[in-house]
Image (cartoon, rainbow, N blue to C red; front, top):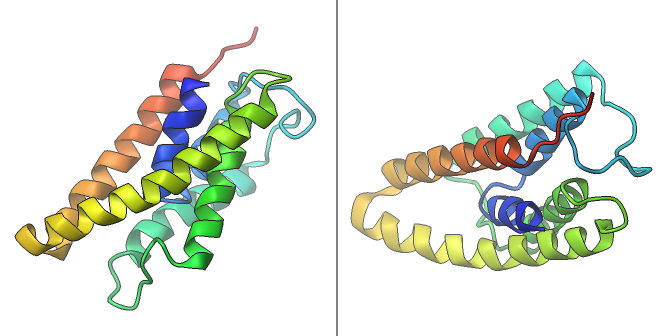
Length: 153
């Protein structure tokens, strides 16, 4: 369940990163969950698309027109990807709990990281704080995926 919470925290800051991380694990057959949602390995185009969405979000976040992460549409996406990643990183028959934990963590993290980013931006500016947040979230998603993957024979 720790992985579900941690990936939910990442979803709160960057909604598409958990989707990309879970897609890579699913493609490699390294998810702990082989339930009905995660039984089939996604195709290469699906994994590439999930990865492109993650990096597209990072680039889009730099635009002046990018909405705050706590607007309704952004929160829905964060809660959804937090729940999906939480379920995927849970063991079978614990998917619902993992989804709930991932969703709650994403929701709380969205507000916490929004506040932290706003404070940092006042002191250091938008680009440096955005770059640091991006690096931290990408590194976190990769570290969580590597730490909690399960290899199957």
